[in-house]
Image 1: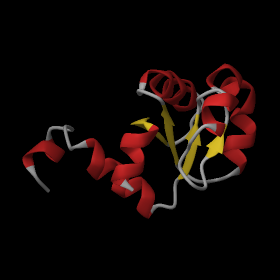
Image 2: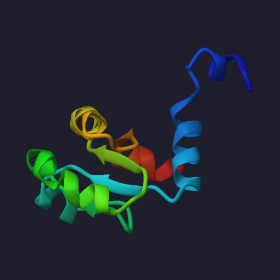
Image 3: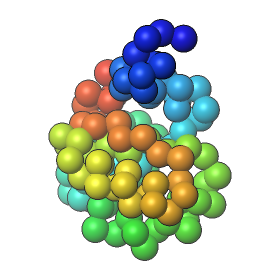
Image 4: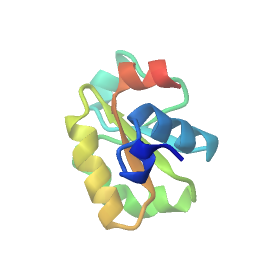
Length: 102
């Protein structure tokens, strides 16, 4: 274990790799129009304004979650909502950046 991991400061890409290894589901929280214009293959589109109403559906997936959006702001909000509801989640940031880390 490296010093950054001990301090809880491991890089986001390492965390993403761990979640991918655990077969995490990728949820893109952008609008349906933004999602239609481009997204990570296999990602589910659940817009941020509906995420709170989809918690039980997400829990039924029984997998960890990586959330993404355009820049990382909306996915950060979504991650907070999901964590508050007991879901194992990480903010993957912007979808294009996340795609490059997968």
